[in-house]
Image (cartoon, rainbow, N blue to C red; front, side, top):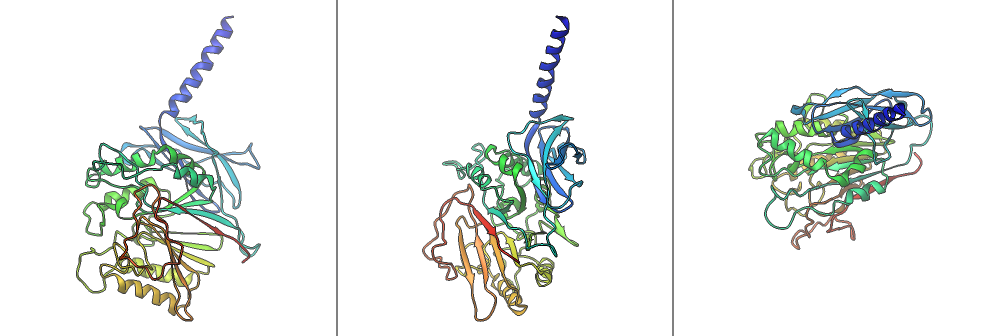
Length: 416
């Protein structure tokens, strides 16, 4: 009888301890980039803890691998980047999160998939990805008085229901407020508050995520390279996302690149090098000289079937209102990029943009030059704004305008 009592006591204690570890989880786990030999995972705890991920190929469940172990720290907002580097191309892996060496039970299907090795072997694999921008999560204590600017958070669950291979976050993924942007403490508070949204967790855990930033992730509304605290907001972007890089070559910023099947994705930073909107000057730039030259060289070197240029703020629209390329003196840089694409006959260039609180598709077709598209996806949860009557985008494809909260799913299918 004594033995049975001792066993029962251990059983209850064991599960109490596991539950205690789960309370240390602030948000995530989140799947970051996926490559053939490496996958990044991310997690945030509520206080200092040791975190790791164990994973196995679903075809070989008895063979388990473990990521690096990270001790989360306050100065890094208790975030951790975990690398699964014992993977092989084109395989699916189940993963489990451990906090302080205790397995955390998940409510979601925690799997990730590595990219396939297909070149010289097969046609490119079909795939699907989702995109959206402007994710405002209300926090009444620090929001402007009145009705909340955000809502319909279930949209994140709707995206997860579509089961995309990855999600492209197109900027304004958080909205820094007045109490936030001047301190590291405020910026990390805002990222933590947004990332902890309950409806977002399944999308983070089941789908690979890539991100760019825009003004509200970067600083105040319409912020540019003059924002004095941009080093802190760029650091927070790096802490809370799991992109392949945070800069390319010697260029630092929220810039990265990845390919998926026979598509290349150029993730651009439209804030770190941006001239002020109100600056009166010739040759104004949004991308900055170095980032722009990298983009040109990468585009002309790419042999991908489709080339997706991902950036905040619309590129093609000729409406000329708000923060678009045809406003505030940036038209010359827009023309420069278009002329480069035309001169080098670069086909299938598609801009994916956000920011504008409406969605639409713009198309530029000029003679025998390649057609260029700009697909704007906005907003996810922030207030949706109706297009003003005097904003006439002559490049808009009829029927493509959406003036409500929405997201976009792209399907890439077919033979090489």
